[in-house]
Image 1 (cartoon, rainbow, N blue to C red):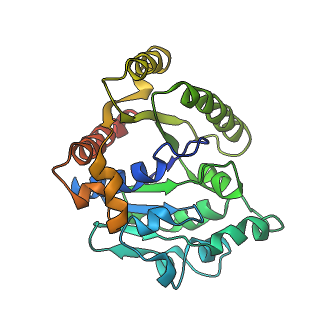
Image 2: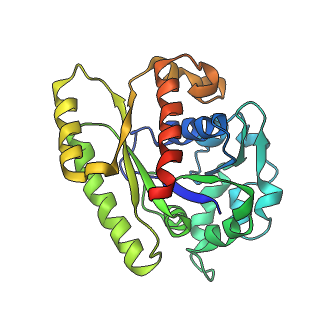
Image 3: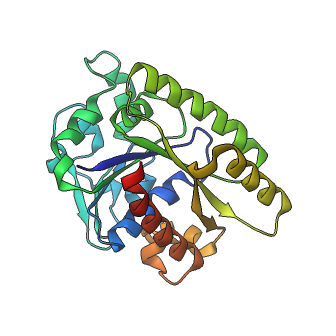
Length: 256
């Protein structure tokens, strides 16, 4: 059975998509079968996985509206080593179209149930807002991986996300929980970041992943080449950190 994790944070600009594509590439490198689902109409995870969103014949939009199966719509990215269920601007229209449909918050879950045995990990890159698309991701997932910067405003955003997860857990998906917090764009020279990091560990304990992703130029450059940093420059500190994170996640699975 595949483990389905949303990569989510209601605060924008925290590195959700960077985390999703690099974790997918890292998991693929350590021998896992991975599907990355792009639920953001911007399609950044799609482009960052070596798939051109403008050339998509079928996308996650078709899967949510049940005009195509996931098997038909998913594409294997040769460069990255994992499957991608891509997104483009069409997906913005799905918000409106889903409102009047039955099981509108369960569409993604039903589609993923069919491919459960084909993958070890399914990662869902969610948009920053709490929308019908994000709700589909949360209803389909076993848990949430929260990438966050060690800054004050990030703590406020985390409170909102925890409340959202509690509501979805209580009303729609009793399996949903926070898998862990991933500290990203970390600069140990900044005292505030160290302080916030310690606060996170004190409050959330082992829910904070041991791996820390450093602030890294090569990770930031990689999307312009249509690749995850892990593939673009495997020797970069940020890339190596994501591979370590992938290994840590695999090791944690039996205890989750």
